Amino acid sequence: MKFKLPILLIISILPIIKPAPVALTAPLLQDGGQDYVVQVDDWLSKLADKFYGNIFAFPAIVEATNTRASEDSSYTFITDPDVIEVGQKLYIPSADEATILLGNDVLSVTGHSANTQGFPITIENCGLTITVDAPPQRAVTMNQSATEIMLALDLQDKMVGTAYIDDKILPEYADAYNKIPVLSDQYPSQEILFDIEPDFIYGSFASAFDDSAAGPREELMKLGIAAYLSPFSCEDTSLRPTVATMDIVYREILDIGRIFGVSDRAEALVNEMKADLEAVKTTVSQVDTPMSVFWFDSGDDQPFVGAGSGVPNLLIELAGGKNIFSDVEGSWATVSWEEVIARDADAIVVIEADWSTAQEKIDLLTNTPTYAGMKAVQAEHFIIIPFSNTTAGVRNATTVRMVAKGLYPEIFQ
Image (cartoon, rainbow, N blue to C red; front, side, top):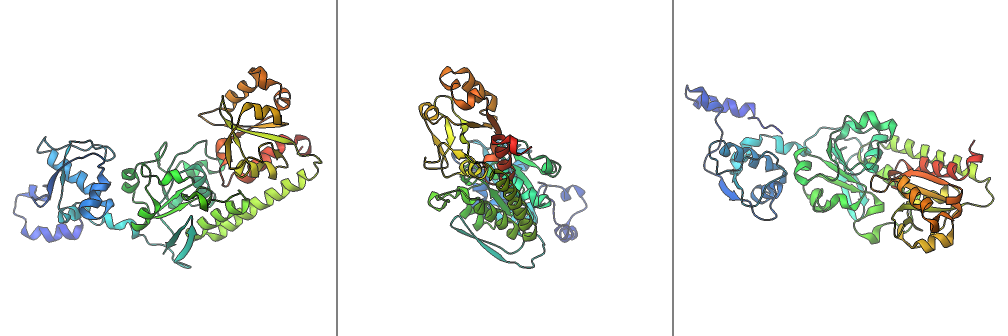
């Protein structure tokens, strides 16, 4: 971020400037600030909050410290605002100096103009009340499902960053996605986030709002940053749905549509998903006996599987199948291979992920004599699904069709 002197400030200084032109470009630092030595658990936005009551003012510390460092080597020259180390010497400018260094940049976070018709709107989300006075203009998505919901609603021009992508973005959204800055392969730090001045942060998993990521949503909202979390991942687990349903997926999409003032797009997307699912339902109604399914996510010694109340179980049932672990509590569960063998599924959904590829799991099943005798392995009845398809979002309807076609290829020809 670059900081320039406001034009009016420069004009007001000009009458008192002496003929020496160098004064115009000299650092505007007096002795009103203070030196500071970095302590354990310090970070720049934390210091900005401590000294100015505003986490977005941390670039002033960077600018001022680097100015001092150019004249005095005892100060640290900050090349990466995300990295400061214990013992480094910084310069904390006074509030007046910080204001001059930042100009109006620090105030611009909530100052975007937008069409406010139908606003403000209020949404209850995972125990928090989110109120937005106008559609956000500087959104950041912290997980792939959140990113793809935004792109499906054609909101890429409202996005200033994205992070933590598990798989390739769906092809229909790739061009739009490629124009959005990727802030981090995983979760960006608060310094990185605040440097781009978001007014909305959207996560699919509670971990997006850990202290090591965006920070607690309550704190973000105090700073004027709206923060939405998928209802499937509420921080308070008692607020999460006991059983995954498509209605909850639809509600999330409709919530984002309301927040951004594009309810018509959200409703159209939901109706399209409903139509896709209804078509699959009609087709699989021809099946007399549902095929049994083992949803294999990962795990060599102990398989991690889709259990009875999460998205995998929902997708299996909508595809006309029967989850062999539907009686196990929770969305996911770690089980034993003895249980898998005893339940002997007709088909195996194998998840493709960087950390546990589908081929690795198929090799494990086919090359281990104890597992190789299972019906699905004998028949090589494997259905490969990308990991992102197991998260609640826009992929769910197409994933149901993928699973259904894998189970009953003869009726989908």
